[in-house]
Length: 442
Ligand code: 5AD
Ligand code: SF4
Image: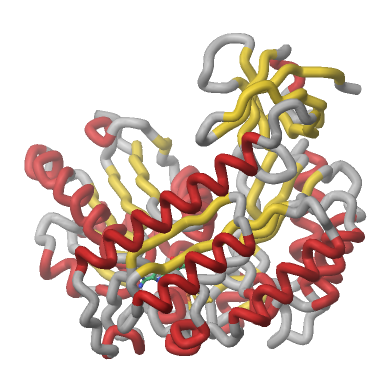
């Protein structure tokens, strides 16, 4: 077994993906190299998600799988970070005697020292303290040496919205935005390194800079749009209540902004939207959608939907179904409500049987699958601009990239096209991807 080799598993959203990139970089800095097999590692880390019970159980399941490895090799260090670590803290060390290290969402930068400390002293440790604004501002994750044509760039972190079902404000802390100058410098550097597409990320990017009196998010997008070498811009996640007219206008104005927006509605019933503390009504949401389509007629939307929120009636659910029919999202990510302790909704009486929730969930999936199928099917025969990301899993000579709508497109072509924008005629639509023929490139 290599002395300084680590194995890392990442669960959850883009924020965790970026934190994991940082972990790789930090551990590289103290001589650790990443391995693909846990049994080759002297350090195993799980970067976890606490947003739903399923994600939590999955993380615990994976942790349990490493127990025999730890028993065979007591010198190995086993650590847990991310949102479960933040929420459970020391309790994890009590519950899992084979766990050595727990680090929170604000403590990733401390990992090298913590690992070293555990290695030297063999004393198990936990660090999940939230940091003050000043320190957090110093510690925004920034680019790593990873080679890719598409990159996430963190613009803000945390959430102040306290949707009644959501644990994120508790495990990620208050909103904090990164100075625009720093973001733009990072993107310029990325462009120089060959990155062609950036996705600006944060729990709620639409409220970027409000507290810091920074430029608005749309002004930031405008400046990113002007960076030479960047061909495409995306951003996520957007809260509908903070989507300004100015930002809507960007979809008509900024040539590099992709025509796709993830705009989670959560449900279609005003009664439930209120109980969820979402801060908008169905009408207001539909009005935003109409304005987006006015400025950018071929924009495609995606959404998150929660089924079975406490007290959801058949009528409430019907309102969500009719909203799906009205908006016609290209895609949705749907979840059955999962009570999270400490959140406001956890105290609301929930008398809908699990079977009814499951049945509603399936009805919704059936409806959405048909809508998505129709939208993607209509792509067949069209010519789409694709940013080539590299060789596809489909075999030699096959490339893959994404359309402006963030759909994977596979086609055959020479490997040197990676990183370039090409035109592809779509010949077939599958459930998760499109197949096409390369037309031309310049
Ligand atoms: N139960 C089910 N889904 C949830 N989400 C957040 N919290 C919960 C919960 N307690 C979903 C929301 C959010 C997405 C990231 O996860 O739809 O937009
Ligand atoms: Fe959670 Fe709502 Fe914040 Fe999104 S906006 S992270 S759903 S509290």
